[in-house]
Image (cartoon, rainbow, N blue to C red):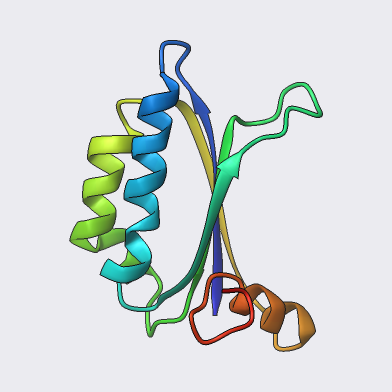
Length: 116
């Protein structure tokens, strides 16, 4: 399994409605991209200066996790909802090692796990 994390900083003119539309589009990826077993997202709590505005974290369980990035549903979200609203974006991907952390993270948002 791979953990894919994205941090977004929105352009100043982006509205709450636009962020909600982004959230709906991102959430739909769970059902549209095979192997996207978990997806959580949300606004930053603004406890620290300099943080990103929004984060998306996905757990991917697929033969080649790069297939997620090239999937038409992911490309549509990136093109229609992310690119027009984002001032900056940073992402990281890393393998989840076997063990308790992997099990907990994998269960978040997984309809087979306790996170639902």
